[in-house]
Image (tube, rainbow, N blue to C red):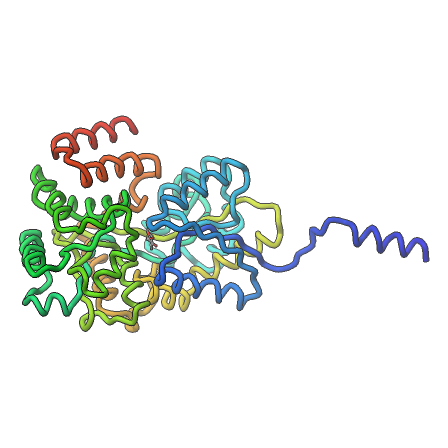
Length: 398
Ligand code: BGC
């Protein structure tokens, strides 16, 4: 009896290493109305499959703040079990030895991710310089080079969506003369960089700063510095401003506000020669000894690449599925256009990774370039000085 009692006490006091169920702590920056609605699809799926989700949101569009928090946790040896991540940063963290490829590669192999993803997108999610095991999962493809406009405001001013940068400037002048803020913008470094890369891709050449980038700045309102992107989208939704240049997570805000493309708002890509700036949202999984978290990582990776999940999530998020086999018939015309244009751009060499959203470079050079762009957008720095500063930044980071 005594022996049994001691055994019971020892058992009760022993640290529990037994499996309690899938658990995941997810660090992300999806906090706007549209973003939260999309993320809820994943949280609900995870819970429906018996998982416990510990949410770690870090507010701040574009993820600059979230990336700083993530880095600090990794440096402190306390990474979350999963985090939102962008292209090249996956390899950076892999090289730091904190990523757990083998937990999800087994899922990727069992589910046949190689046959579900475009090979270029698949490679981005493989550790060991893009050719080893899968260590991250993609949930979507966002397009950056979009313009969103309030239909009623455009109709009332006899305007149609511009198809050239000159038409865009002319439309902005008409709106300005009518007393409407032409260009809804939030003066934050990543938003300035988002506009910059759309203009740079579309125009190029020596005069692009002067003709488009600098001119656009003159079409914003005095309240733009520091404004969050979704607040700027709200100005277009309410007709306080004419249009906004922003990735298609902006469409998530229109959707969350119950607005329909074609009726309430219009979307067209910013003028370019079949260019398509792409941005993939991915989640990466970090090393852990906790069996609940390993199970959580496997479950989350499997759910994220699920066919129905990628449909429903992207209907809310504004993006298109990363999986190639998701039917597009329930998507709206903006998403259908994005899905068609990505193929045209891919075939004609126009598919360009977004630097403003961390798809072209890691976070260090991205931040350095953003600093120059935002200084140029928000000061009287000349175009020549800005171009030289950009070149110096690139050289210093090579
Ligand atoms: C992400 C989007 C997000 C946007 C604004 C981008 O970098 O890819 O998913 O909605 O930032 O926060």
